Length: 403
Image (tube, rainbow, N blue to C red; front, side, top):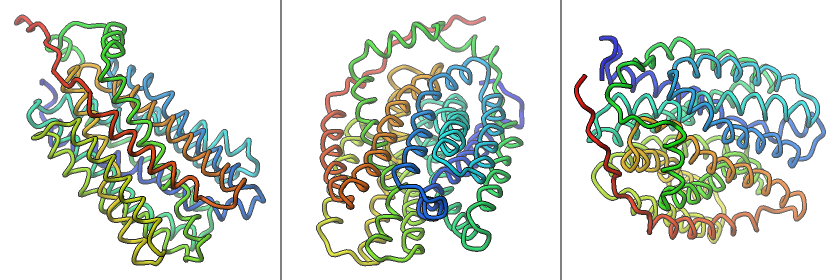
């Protein structure tokens, strides 16, 4: 694929990985703000949860459209515009006092910013930079970089909160995300050159093809469960541990461990996806998650059990992302990968929104997260079953004639 000499596949992967490190690392900080913000502002956990649920819903709803824009006009343009919106949302969140202000800042604006700088956008550029035999492994490396962001940014965010308070911490995070702007230069693509290499197909034709494919629908439904599970843990797990008389540092450390082991997990699942059947790997991943949660809630709670659970669930955390995107690329090709993986991610974010909101609602109604943990286990088993019958045969494309 022709591109400027310095924009080699390795450079595209490195800069794309750092973009995900920053964007997703900041995103995973929001669970740390649940208790201090609700206590200072005198609002319920459900109010905070609704704003973060809205963020995830907007993230998902906007993702197909930002993916279409990136596929047609280029990844870099989407990254720059989205980063500015992301930073504005963080700055406004720092001065929010009501639920509506949280919905606007933490919900709408940050959701749009994430849709412009998340996995689907970066994965489209990375996938097009690598040949098919190296693609899923490259996606795994990019996913590992996003996971490393969670590991690095959580202690960074907790330190900011502890030393400067949550107001100033959010302002500093707003400045931090601006690092994405210069990095986006590496993800500029030559769309004219790509047009001569890819099979001629419109976005409308690609969407019709995907939604007429039963395996794509099953993949999206399974992805809904992924969002439901991980965002419940990401947002509510620190508060759950505080309710069990653990320290704030225990919750932060647990989330950081999830991020650390997610680095290895994302890479390994991506590596395995380049060598084994992706749908079976996805099924095994969802099943193992369900077992891990069941064992965790059955055992007595202690710092050791929390950290072991965090390591295991971290290894399983975002391994779904390179496998899901890799499976879509394998079946449908990479021309509209950001679009099709963006639509799949919409399902993921619908699950995220429901998981975040439902956990807050159930806690306020019952005073416990017990029922939520049971739902996490049951839905994991459902997702494991949904991925097994996916038709993962590659769709044959007519060969492009030389120019």
